[in-house]
Length: 88
Image (cartoon, rainbow, N blue to C red; front, side, top):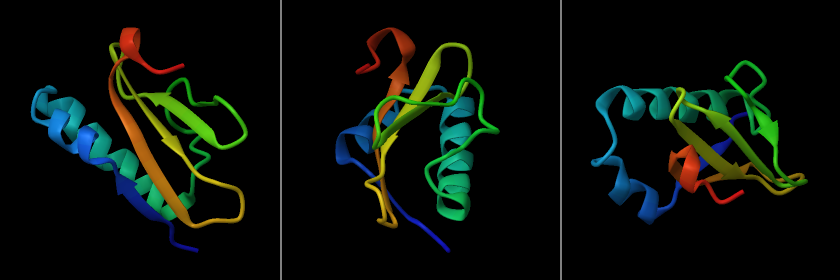
């Protein structure tokens, strides 16, 4: 099953401020989310935050957070940025 991944507008606007290697890692994460769904155990420090929310480290400094409701195929990336400012 292929998942639909949506990136919030706020995240898209902030991508230009991130280093290019972090942007590339996010695109790889989005491709993995589309192919395999919200559970990404192969990504560094992946963990569920709540029943519907997940996060992983893109590198040491940056993280990505996303949400996916149970039995839905839509995944929404709602945060990409420094782990110090992450909403968890």
